[in-house]
Image (cartoon, rainbow, N blue to C red; front, side, top):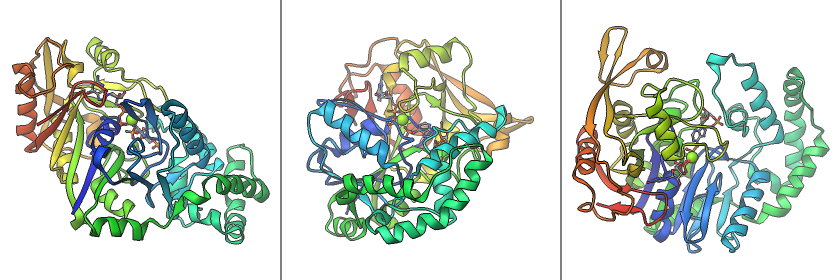
Length: 423
Ligand code: GDP
Ligand code: IMO
Ligand code: MG
């Protein structure tokens, strides 16, 4: 069996896209297992530079079957734009992407409600969502008021579903003073989606099962990171799904025992986009320096990312929760010019020492305890082997590895596909 998962072990934007792109060179199947077009997975390879939102990062290998699985939420309008864009930049047609019929549809009212709900939250309570309709769409899924990709293929059924749910949706939209929809308007949109994407919609269950049972190489691609997991993250500042390996099994239809390796992607420092506690955030010029050298601006929204030092307590929690077998440490090169590098090894909360990650309200009060590491003050971006890395960088990596008790298998020293050290 060869099913490997790639998950974010921080607050998202760890570099999952670039790692999946690298690993997908010989993957037969890549499955995006949760989330929607809130993702911004940057991939730079010989075909160009891409910001992927819902399309799996295995799309660039024509031999790879890419599945947007049951656990996802899909906006076919933005998916169409994304595919057009990939085709324009790469000069290749995208014909290796399929959508499971169980994936939920992000409807125009979900996007409107996402923005409206956020506008009602007070400054301190804002989640800072991507306004892609993710939360409202997953809410409808949970309350059995959702529409699914497969519904597009049966017009009578679809119409019945829209007639059932639209009065309630329109009441919600009216409450916020927003535009309401007619059944015919939504049916028209759905017909357009079906015309373009009808043939991409499949029942992935037998296909994935066959791939698992015949030992094909499968990669599961997570969106976001565990710190914004709806159960184990910084609720309510979370996304509405589970970007963990448990979410991968559920979302992709893979039994837990089939998972071989879990690659946890971790930045050599940390970033967070949106609201909620973030204990190692730096508000000074060091944070500014990480942002500018790391190019830390959202791939989906362009928002400046909050930046800070690596939080080993949060990372340890993430490694445990995900059963991470291997780490991929990204953006090491961003630290090249820092004389001192800090890592957080514990917190003080209301006078008490914490060596574990507490829940949200305690995180709000946490003061990080740091240990210092000596920087290496030289360029690592051209290193391609472990031996080529400066000694202080190796020490930094070995210490992270030791404290997380997890092997660091990949070290990336730049955004391009080959800027990677395999250990
Ligand atoms: P994802 O959402 O986890 O796929 O990560 P993002 O693509 O949102 O953010 C990672 C950013 O860092 C992107 O701009 C990547 O091109 C860039 N990147 C990835 N790995 C490296 C690296 O090792 N060094 C540098 N300098 N940039 C990297
Ligand atoms: P990738 O896959 C970073 C954050 C938003 C917000 C919260 C909920 O590129 O790592 P949502 O729109 O999902 O309801 O927003 O989660 N968020 C992300 N932060 N990277 C992402 O994706 C994100 N997707 C959502 O900022 O705080
Ligand atoms: Mg991203």
